[in-house]
Length: 349
Image (cartoon, rainbow, N blue to C red; front, top):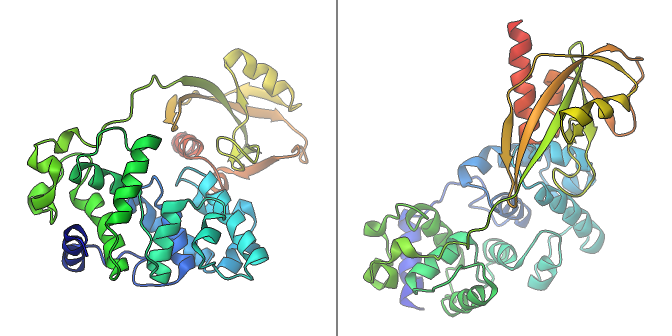
């Protein structure tokens, strides 16, 4: 066993995290759900969602039998909704192709939607004690600093070096402690900013620390101008009910409920015309912005009170809900913020 591995394992057993909701189990389903939720999301944000999700979908069978609408509703607010769609699709694949049992074969795991090599390795290590290496963002940071690896870690050529390093460090025993130790070290000590090098078990062999380059590594992602987009969201109110539209199954907020949209204020009048309803403009709401991975969206909400509509008017993919029910539906975070703002305004009038 390498000095890197032995030091890390010894540290994790004493100082690592041991009481997270998805720990102390070898249930591959529970571990899989947690690993998907933890992709690009902080542990503190995941804990509450994980508990509610597992209460509603306690098994692969229950997840596979649920509707996508139900799954997205329990994911609503966690972001990166393709993760939820992939999780649901993968559960159905497991039922169809693996008789409802999560596959132990490493290649079969990676064949499931949403499971890449690192996620598969975490599941294989925690659930089946297989000797597989992970390489998520935290681990890339640890290895880049410890071994002084230059270059943006997600660049294919740099990532290849990091995978190779990770493989050479694998111990032949204590895989759970080793894998969890890598995660814990990156999340609690070897952090992006203000790393706690003084208490790091790998300080003695860390090349970045020795060369006073901890804050330079890993090399930041090359900066690009983030595109900015604008949209006008139309909040149609009929008494205490609001209309939501189902978004297309793929793309941004795929499968979620949202407000009808227009490119700008002028075109919003044309958008309203397609509903065949009479409206009166309501109180303006504050504009808001929402950052995605590849662009920033500026949203202008416009409220309209319905003067007349037939009781049965609701097109395909449209639904009228009370504001309370709409807030609890499978909706994107900005839509929930708009509804909550609207709720406060109506309560104060």
